[in-house]
Image (cartoon, rainbow, N blue to C red):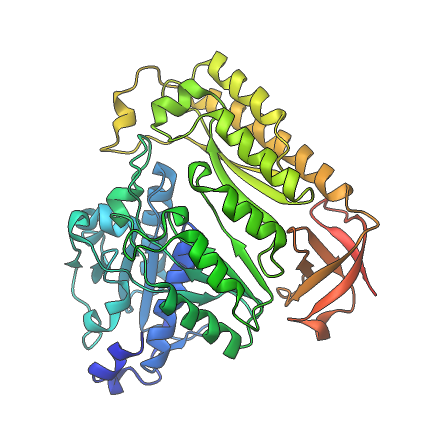
Length: 443
């Protein structure tokens, strides 16, 4: 990453200030952090409150219509707040709608998916110039742009894969990020050792379709997991998301015996109706999904299992939603991440008959979120009275000190600030007043 600074005269950037705004997924946050490091190495610092800002970087999302709206709002707001700053817009919205973004008043450069780490090449002398576009057509994107972000002193986000070959009917991600690709295991291990050198204890593996790892190198996700497990100094790895058809028994079995890979899974279901899954062009049915959940629970009874669900997709009739709801209700999972379907231009879903009214989407979403709340609280309460290792995290200002158990239970602890970035044994108490964490007593 630092090679860019070496090739460019960065003296003009010394003591310049920058601000960063990120929308969307963990992968975006990881990539913004990498951009921040590139600018820091070139002489920039993160702007302090009230300080004149020289560069604004906005990393956008485009997974839904709401995400696009938030992106446009963010750009307009930041331009108003910093009218003299050089404004760079990147991310999925920039890749998919470069002309529209470039025409927003105040935007100086639009960087596509494979240009983020080249940002220094486009800053020039920071003189404002309306809407320059540097976007590679998605079909031509081949390069993997590395990223390893420092979310805080305990948790790092390491990008292991980018792009997707699946082309689900509702999704624009393949059009925004391109085909599935990845770096070598050797290069990823080097980044993991860098986290150790930086004092990091936990790495979250991120990507678009991580189970597809190996498209570029002929390796497999299982190979990668085994290699990571051998890196001394990393206490915890978490796998952010794996498609059910790519969550192989080999991976589940490995996690069940690993000291470093946490009993924490995130699996996108999207619908508990086979008819809807077929309309979505998903590559599994609900029987396979249930089999994967059961396999995890058989091997790791206390595993945390998060599940993505989309409500209100085209073709999801009332009967099909009820089928999906009952299926999810009977699944032994921990938490649901519920999304309302959003019409995306250029997707095959627009050819499907029967459009779900917005008010129906809202009702369905509320029902699933209530079900999620019931499942999550029941999971937490089953652990009251247990003693578990917790990695203490530095709290935000005014917030209680907290940390997470291996199976991702949030624990709040008193008088633990001095234990930041340490793993301590904690006895799990009752739920806090907000019902968002267990109270913990450090032993």
